[in-house]
Length: 407
Image (cartoon, rainbow, N blue to C red):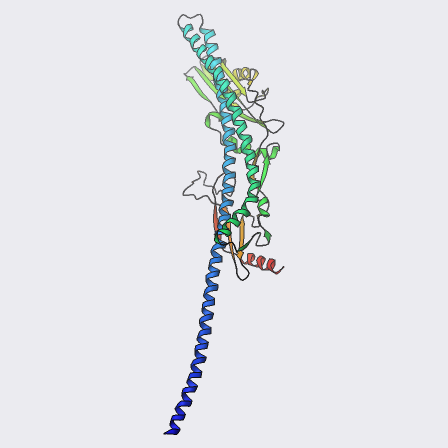
């Protein structure tokens, strides 16, 4: 009995030692799991901060691109408005001249002469008042164009300085102990080094650079400015044909000069048969923003249809003496992209880091913004359709990041 009791005591001692070892092992595993959980939570937190910073930077980049697109649209819109003022002034001048000619012809006819005299007086006063108004409006639109052009350059330069401050503000809102870095070009080039090359300034003083915006502006003209052609009277033997249009020229210093011409003539058939020919000029009018024109131009086929009245209008063209100045606009650079539209954010502390990547990209959904020509629209700075997007870090980005960290 005594020997058995000693054996049981020995067994109990061995079990205690095993239990202590097991408890120690379990404690170590528990501490490891707890530490891994803290590490995972910290990593998730850092990743959230990096995602927020990267996406916020992409939002700011998209807003900048959309601002440039809207201001480019505004430049075109203000130029179209000047074309409208000049074209309407030419049209009013043509109506006034037509009324004066009609008064001269009918002055000897009782009652009718009095009516045409009153009509001529009314149109003369309306035309005079509009000329003064148009002169003010043209100068105002020209000042707006210069202001928009300057704002584009100023905000594009300041954006590069403001974007790092934005990222710093986003990171500091989460924690003041975190550090961050921003890269472009596959995680190799510091941000925003490549952003400078995303856009470029185009100046109208350069004929080639001005031509691109001129073509877009001319396509944006309203039907009245493009061609004011129709028939006032159309009978079997005679027609009164109205023709006119507004044209654009670039002066020596790079400013855009709008000019317009309108004419109306009586056309008739010879011996009541054959084709119509111009027989009598009835009215004409022509206006220029600055420089008078002495050579024929399109003007909505005015010279082709009304040669006599159009020549008279060109010879008597008047100017608003509004000297248009050169201006600039922003355009996407032809330089290779090389990740200039993306940003990679590195956020971390002394123990852990997290990376996030975002970009700004141009997107025009066909179901929302349908194109009549069914063409695919590539990225540009004339439609404000830029939007931010978080993207995954590619293998090339990881290679660039590892290479940069190794240096």
